Image 1 (cartoon, one colour):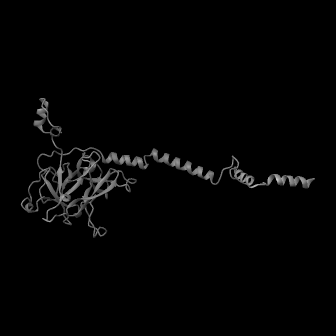
Image 2 (tube, helix red, strand yellow):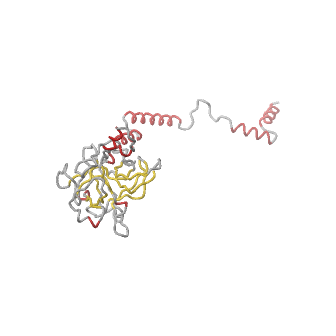
Image 3 (cartoon, one colour):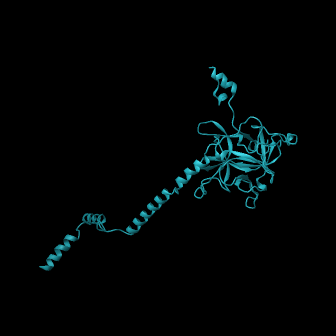
Length: 312
C-alpha cells in the first residue's frame, strides 16, 4: 500500500509531457526566492549609506557648500555692476574702463554682432575652493558688454601713484581688475618654462613683477615714435604690448566653454599682415561710459523724433 502511494505521488510531481514540463518550469522561474520579511544582499548597508549621503547633503546645504550654491555665489560676486569713467577726454590712471576688441565679433543668440571684452574668469576646477577672483584666475574675452566686476579694469602707474593723471603712449603700466578683494589683482603674462614654445596666456596675479608691465602704443607703427609720450584719448584704437616679451595682447579665434557660455581665448601673440600691420586680433579700445547726446535729448524733450541710439 505504501509503495502504491509513493508511485502515485511521484507521478503527480513529475510531468508526463513536454507542455507540462514547460509550465512547471515557468512556474518555478517566477516564484519568490525569499519571503517578504527577508532583506536581500546588503540591504541594511545600502540603507545606511543612503541615509548618510542624505544627511551629508543636508549638512552642506545648510552651510552653503553645495556646488550649485557656490556657483550662484560666484555669479553674484563677478556680476556686480560697476560705474565706468566718462569716455570724453583722455584716459586717466585709477579710473574704471573696459578694454574691448571692436573688430573681433561673433554672432550671438539674437543675431547681432558684438565686440569682445577683456574679462576675468573662475573655472570649474576653482569653483569648489573660491567664488571670486584670486591669484591665478584666467583672463578671457567675453561678449557681454554690461559693466561689471569681471570686465572692468583700471590703469595703474608702475613707478609711483599717478591717480588722476592722464595716461601717455609708451608708458609702462599695470592693468588691474576692479574687485573689492583684500589684495589687488593685476594682469600677468608669465613667460615660464612650462609655456615655452607655445602662446602665452595671461592670468591674474597679486604680485606686481616685471611680467605685469604693459605699454599702450598707437595703432599705426609708422606714427608710434611721433606719439611717444602724448596723451591717449578714450575710444582710440591702440595696441597693448607686453613689455618683457614684446608680444601684443590678442584675441584668439578659438572658443572655450565657461560658466558664462562660450568665450574667446586671450593670449600674448602678435598678429601681422603682409604690410607688417597688426591685424584685428591685436587692436583694442579702452572705453568708458558714453554720455548721451545733449542736443538729441533737448530735441526729444521738445517732441521731435530722435533715434534711440542718440539718446542712450
